[in-house]
Image 1 (spheres, rainbow, N blue to C red):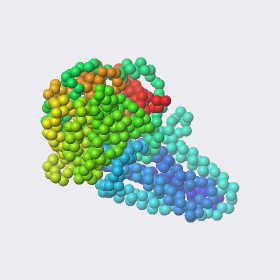
Image 2: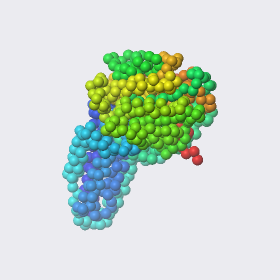
Image 3: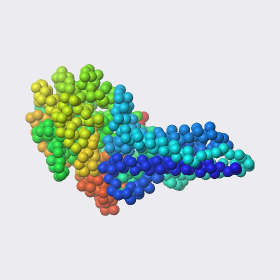
Image 4: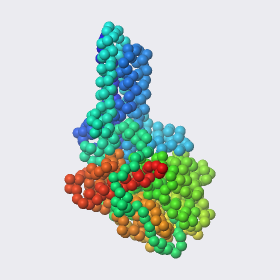
Length: 638
């Protein structure tokens, strides 16, 4: 035989099998997450699968590059049986790994609200009980593991259905010529696929944002994408380049990133501040946060927090700017939101930034951070050190593993009471952050309380009830302490979790987040329905403790700043969105690609063709914010 047709036919057949696997993964992804992706018909799914081929092209070429090169190498030994066995092992190994990312996302997506990125392992990177968590995940998601290995088995079986046999070469010239032609032709074809469709110099290789191009709603972009693509495309993305589209004057005029509040002395003395970051405690679970929303059949799982809300200032239109626990700290404590390149996961996260800690320490506050997980878990102790907390209290300091939940850390109730005992010994004023644990997967509570809390409609609901109960116990105990009446308590959450009501399954409302401020015997009482976000917590604390100097923040004080226009900015796989009190703008990092009415939280009716001045201003604000964000935080100071 003088030509290599059998080898190239086999190559394209085997690559076609991988395309089938990616299509199956996309269908399964929708099946397990359609309450979020909201695909309404088979034809709609088919259209999205077709749009996804461009992204599958890139994923398959990159993940099978070694296999492809080994298959088309211009060498006569490629047909030898031993060589073919090696090629098979390379094919199966590479695709086993990269296809597994898509199966991981079938489960992880609903917790992350985002396709898997290259930093996905940061969630367990610092955990000391990785093996326990690994076997737990195997138990919980055993059905996905069965699906996965069934697919891999069938892929390996189908691979061998087209065999390559050793050949006898009659004419070496023809064989060599066909090898070279087919080699470079195949390389060109696969490079074309890897770029996303053409060789034009003006056309950049496709990126994650391109998934937004032809979809009807932004959440469909996660269906078009695949997890192999998003992981590959975000490798090495913790470094960004500076841009200079806008002048410093424009940024200052629109964003006003430097805040300065006058001293008010509203409490007569410097108040203590306790910030509760409630793990996964979405706004959906709080009755007081939903009183103003018409949600059919709504049920609250936070009786204590609801009772406290009657004497607090609450913000039922507040949104998170983080989607993971590790991103909650910079978002809440320093007003730094997390995008596809998270600040806390970047190479710049060790640099000093202004935060609630820096302003408190400047006023001689004692500062401490409490988190009941193993010290170092989630990287929180490291970032606490970066922010400047003087003391960190974790599972080590608690020093009683009889209260260990078996997975993440110490149950909330005993850890809260431990925290109270530590605070009793602190000098005042103090600023302390308490990051809770129990309201989290695997959704378990102490055995002695089983059956005590309403299990509701989701596994999360009884955990919310338990954490609410633990807070009640903390307050009952803390009321007896000398520091209690002089303390401001701030309650928020790092991100959401499981959702039940359709209202909270909407794209924007996935980030709906609680915020409540309680100060005994004060006028901080009422319901503030203005738009607010994590970015506003830092300047609000600075204002409440009478920090007298200018400081950098994109947020505003929710107590006294009535001049700054509120806005929320966030990120999803298809791009960014910014929301003010007029419109929601979806932005690709350079320009707006969609505008939506405020009540269109699911991005169903794009009104970009009706663009008005308010929309133009909102688009520019997003562009200004992104440039200022990346230039300020995510680039080298050298």
